[in-house]
Length: 110
Image (cartoon, rainbow, N blue to C red; front, side, top):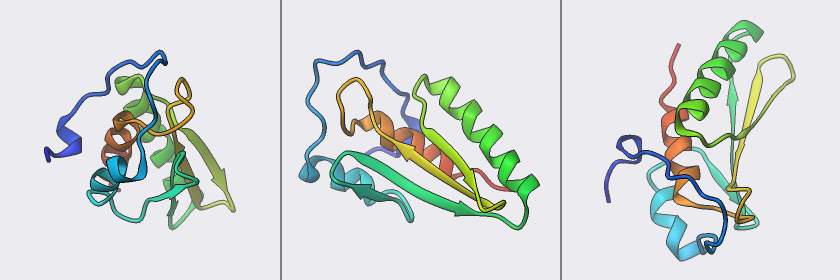
């Protein structure tokens, strides 16, 4: 399977079936510390040394999402934690786009 970070998101306006577990598991195996919730959402929490680094991370993650045209829910909580939640809203579940964005976000370093 190709490296997810080398792929580009393809616009999804619906009409597709969300990925089933056997379809998304090979993508999940390429990621680190991400979980799939109810076969519908891809989730990871990142912990930083301070609020400023958490905020910097959010800004870079937002730039990645904007470049890909695929936008996660991004939550800053407890001053140094950022939770990323990805799913393809148009299909109500997971698509390859979610794993592409996750792979690119997890490469952010400070």
